[in-house]
Image (cartoon, rainbow, N blue to C red; front, side, top):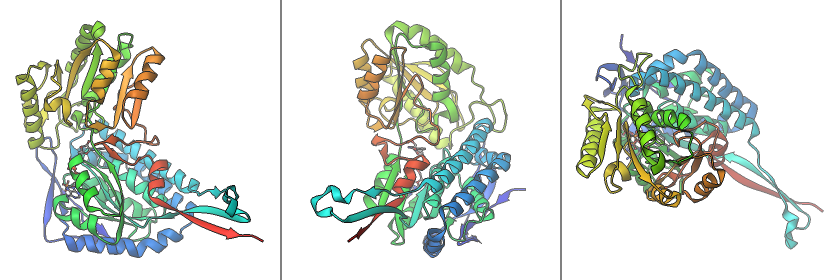
Length: 475
Ligand code: NAP
């Protein structure tokens, strides 16, 4: 029987007169029905979050940590159901969906630990001549209602990266998942209720971002917007949000440098996984590889062989490595970008065939810097390999991007590695690892068009709380 999941507003299940079908991207089959929110539902969700504010603020750190720890445990207990929801809504192969569930549980655990650690500092007032006899501390207060807007590609874990730290810091949340992938977010709202979260502390509204996004961002009850998604939408939110706090986790066209002394036994399999996991629909997916001319032939040969071993199929099969993109339209766009690159002189060495929303993983060589596959975010199973002779030239080409989320280098020479680490302009630089590497407690975020602010519960909670100064005079 097909699933029907209402929205969650103020602890109540809410349906509207406009149902929306959730489809398995791989074949377009219907998997669930949810409901399309309008301005009234956004308003009700923000009102419920405002009302729940005092209950969350007044909880002890240990009480908030306890709810998050129970949610961590429940996610692990419901691993298979949540993985099936993630697989069904975004078409991610089931093995990868299980990894996402495990990571989401970790994100909740790290958030619960941060709830315990959240503290201010002692301010050395008498360091100033006029501070004699004064003491001061800062305490961290919740910012209030946080609008959490999340993308389709990691529908569960990226939502937990916002909801976990927000609740740990004593805030309340209105979550708007991507309209293609609302299921796991709605299931999590139920889990949090079971774990004792007060009514209204987490509300989930489903509906089109183009219709209710502005309403949510503008709403006077919303004090902060935390957004993960495309640069285009992120920029719009930033421009509309006025004085509200905004964090933006946006896209990238990640690059990795392969030096002539790189350990190819390690680098090649990681480049294959880093380019093609979830059909390249990962914000830090490897899109540009710069390989030293001395190892070019061997690297390419091994990269092509590794890519051809990937198994395409239904996302529900344990053997599947490559399933589909989020939609046929997205697959057609990637196909057009491939054709454009080839017309401009790139050589397609393997893959690239499209069937419905699926694209065979593609490796290209000699991709001109000017084509979309080089300078924009591909968000598909494609990687371009270009050659260099001089490391500084490779660093310059990595930096010749509007984006700056993560980048990496493979080399055994630590001097070269740190030269690159210092000069590449990104939020995170990985030595002997592909840029498509993330553990959930690390600071994660970008520079340039990749956004601002950092996620990872320790860092997100800083952004989601205000330091308030309390000073007193003695004697
Ligand atoms: P998207 O189209 O920008 O959508 C992201 C979210 O924004 C969705 O919930 C969407 O709702 C909503 N939205 C759309 N228009 C809006 C508006 N005018 N106001 C407010 N919200 C609006 O991105 P996507 O295609 O889902 O995700 C892919 C992008 O996310 C890529 O660029 C990827 O690099 C980026 N990403 C970044 C990170 C990171 O941590 N840096 C992680 C993952 C993904 P609808 O779905 O209803 O349109």
